[in-house]
Image (cartoon, rainbow, N blue to C red; front, side, top):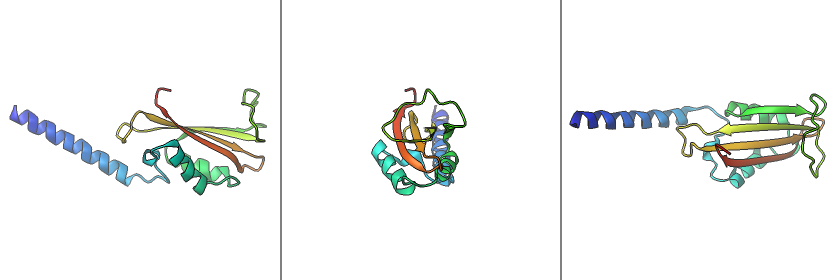
Length: 134
């Protein structure tokens, strides 16, 4: 029984250590796991990717951080199902990020909506934190 407990404790310590090292050495522009609330994430993105900045820089950083993104300009793909908004936009991108199982909150996902003008400049940006299954 003592040997089993020693192996169990050692295994748990190895897993915790590997998790710490994995999260510490990941090279990402930002980590969604560090945002506690939607507002905190929105403030970060508003400061670093303000309205009027190039969407491709934001999309590249989102993809480097582990997001799955899709979308484009209205002219590229028929977008009759796009929602009507109270602002003018030409393109729309949607991204999803799922926290990994070794993060502080493994059951969270982030949904990101980016609206752009004809010059691929950001017009509007939304971020929302949801339970993974929602």
